Image (tube, rainbow, N blue to C red; front, top):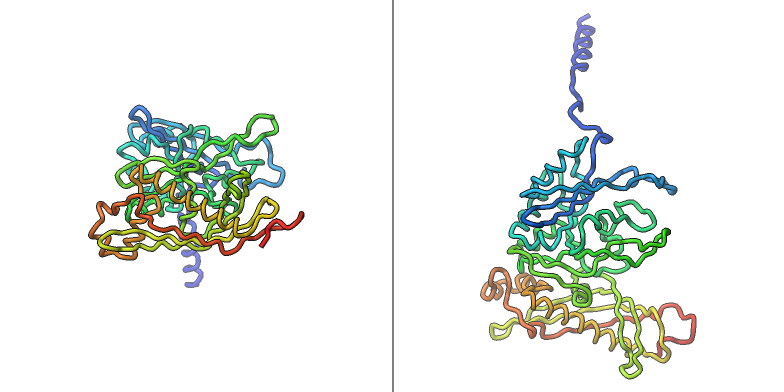
Length: 386
């Protein structure tokens, strides 16, 4: 009898357990996928992209009526005020835990509160350190409204998943908030964010140019503010100075007189930057190793000619990007950090606010070694002559 009484009391208490009554149901929330921040007329403009997960989990034959996302827009004296103004126009709770990227205009990066804007994303408890950070000169609204090619879900876009195309090319290394914090806190206290622009090189079924996002340069941000941008050919040297293995293309001129060109795939397999200290002067020697694959062909071209062309072009691109960075007072290859890691005592003697003095002569030597030249498939006559 006593046992029955105890069991009755236990079952009665279970009925009063609250469980998860205070948790919002997933279908009753909006999910932030990306955020754009602008600064105009002393006002912050915030664009919030809400993703439709029905589009993410779609079948092979998605419904054309599915709306992949909605864009909310508001202004405020602070970024937080603008976000709260957006809150007042929604009818469900907004969840930030699935946010994948933030994109900033040049104007907001140039403002004196650029670092505090980035800090706001870090302080909020729902956001993560894996959020990618980008910059742009184009319209934020247009960029956020762009959907991936062939009706792919938004989670595969270049902004939210920039590593998807890494096997094809790594032009600018994508930066997340964690890497951004580390870069701003360590010498030379500068970080290169990917510069995003709108590309209209695709055609859609309605015979109008299909818009897609493209990365064609970088915005340089320091702990003291915005430094400037490197775009197009002036930024090409950055890809060869990435510490990780990466792949890219290069077009070389084989014969100066005949004006013949070849485009090759380059796979960078090793990078070594050595600080050399002599008489209190610091210079850097760069050693890079590549494997090359021939895409086109020219008869009677030798592997030595190809190697010579690659070495010349890679050196030119590295020097061009470095010198363009010097014009912006930017240590684009983070040479100060290489000295800091290798010879910290020397770094302490000559550094100024984390950076060491750099000139055009600071890179004393660039050694480019092409280990292998792969001719690819041979469908015609011999394309490379030994």
